[in-house]
Length: 252
Image (cartoon, rainbow, N blue to C red; front, side, top):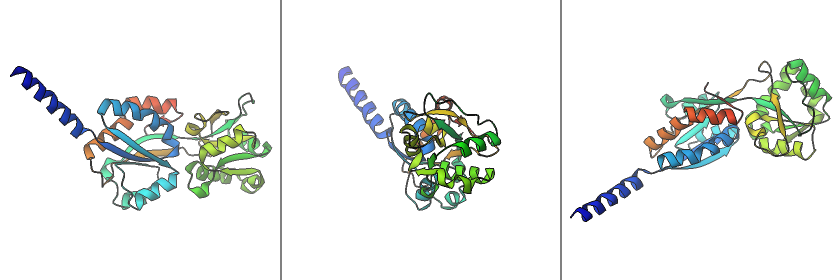
């Protein structure tokens, strides 16, 4: 009788574990990709859930959420009044995760230029033969942000012949690594993941506002409890360590 009871108990535990485990879907901009991908295995091991993650441009991610593509945990960058008004996220679950700055990159072995002030950045850009950054027309947040930086510096027209737009941060860094351009720009979190380039540092905040990223629980989630666990993990102390490692600043 004792052997049978033990077998039944083990079976019950097994069934319970299988039922509680869930697939959690997430969508996020590319700027937070490296950090999220680093955290997924630890979250899966801790909870038994699996995470299916989708990444895209900042604007593209928001538009998918707005049009109703169902994700358990959408991550978006402000401003997002359209996301909140869409009815596709639970507004009261808005959770600041991290923010990330657009940074300057050069090839390894290249002297690091001074980018400590707006004037220093302006001097660097005007002296460069060519630069690359993500194409803002594709919805890349880093590209949209850097376009604003050029406007603030008053050199948009002067820089236009030098600009080579890329498909995402990885594309911009590839152009730098293979020698197509002298200077590359994208989110710091995207620079440190790419081979053949290195970070000089972030642009001064007076000409480049860091991009903030917040998570939500999707309004159409099929497993709110699992979605809540993932969102809590992405805003935990363990997550903060990963954000820092990936060139981001945790929290607001």
